[in-house]
Amino acid sequence: MSDSRIPTSYMTPGNSSFADFLAASAPDLLPSRRALAPGSAAELAPHGTTIVAVTFPGGVVMAGDRRATMGNVIAQRDIQKVFPADEYSCVGIAGTAGLAVEMVRLFQTELEHYEKIEGTTLSMDGKANRLAALIRQNLGMAMQGLAVVPLFAGFDLESGIGRIFSYDVTGGRYEETSFHSVGSGSMFARGALKKLYRPELDQEGAVTAVIQALYDAADDDSATGGPDLTRRIFPVVHIITADGGQRLPDDEVAAIADRVVGGRMQRPDGPYAELEGGTR
Amino acid sequence: MSMGFGGYVSPEQLMKDRADFARKGISRGRSVVGLQYADGLLFVSENPSAALHKVSEIYDRIAFAAVGRYNEFENLRIAGVRLADMRGYSYDRRDVTGRGLANAYAQTLGAIFSSGGEKPYEVELFVGEIGDTAAEDQLYRLTYDGQVADEHGYAVMGGAAEAVAGYLKDRYAEGAPLDEALRLAVAALGHSPGGNGTPGADRIIPVEDLEVAILDRTRTQPRKFSRFSPARLAEILGDRLAETAPAEGTDPAIAPGEVSGPDAGHDVGGEPPIAPPL
Image (cartoon, rainbow over all chains, first blue to last red; front, side, top):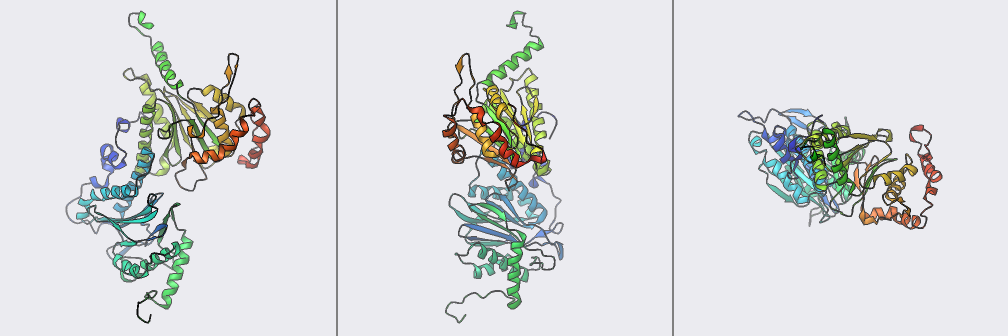
């Protein structure tokens, strides 16, 4: 830190938002304050792809595949796209990877800063709204092809349930029930979850469901990476319950992913869903 | 006083007046204890308010504690959180250091103290930072005029600082487990040495009036700060209160045997346990 007196702007009373503090004292650090040359910038940077989230009684699970693409090139095989936002929430990102990661860091700092200044955590809805505000500021860049579309999930300590929020590039915030998916492979993942999701799934069942859904996304979307069996790269899975959030250890994800892949060896399209009134 | 000399005030007198002013403000408040225990740093203060904190989190491994005027140290606390978050955001979390923060506070307090235009801050601060081992733990104490002291083992600031530090001096042992360190700090805060012929009467501070927080190396999250709830405090202190109340006056008996027991088991860095001074 600087060797001289703390700058006046740091000592001035303000609100509890770190983003607002940045806007006042170091606006160049805010992603939304950067000027872009006209035209599309979509092909300049890698894109992250599919994120899925599923609630289960007592918590929520979020998972993301590990691929980042630039056009038809795989830019990175082991990118992390699901991050803890604070102890009871996490955020997964689809869209322009660099901007998205920067936005996640800003969001993490924003939540922690509020918590330290106020001595209490934001409500689940408060956190979801702060994220919406950060995305809204990015609209100009989104219109030039640098969109960031996160999925936000967490455990609501007030109501005692896991909750999922999705967003659009204008900062629209939508609460989802049971499960949701964003990114290029999301329609396939959502289709899979429609057939696999049960409200009574336990934690392991929920993790299996998201890994099945990511498998289906990778099966039909070239920008989504499936389990990489040769390099042992598996989805990042984040679980949040009343005890807080944690990234599921790689060996546990690997065990479930191996089971899923084993099942697909027998039946490449995945498990059968029950057909009511039918024979199967 | 010095106004008698036609309005001239010598620099020495000016500084002395300002120091007296600050010291007087600080001595009105209750004390805060900062103490190293086996797994980190412990901060204990007597604070009947559950909302207005004297001990707070600054960053992953850094905590802040203060005595004096609330509005002034709250202002410094917020500046510290902003400074730390700004640095962590623009560089990396590992680049936020307690030393840097203590330095910024020292410069600020020093500049305010010696500038004629501003009233000196009536505050004293602790900036504590834990490392990977007890040997790397840092506890800085900053005074109203910007002086920094690098404290070892324990430190006390606030109204009854001398009495509390005196009590700790006789009983503090390095590498004590958390429960033991907490009981010692709470007993020290309640200690009154007496004087002028009156015997000291140690108080038992109710659990609701205690503010306790730790920087705990063993916490798995990157943020090592944690605040104790009254329930957890009661759990740790509950039996002690019943024990020490009658044992008053014989308290030096807690000394060597018991304190060095768990210390020996801990074996800090292969060094022989250090016996508390008698």
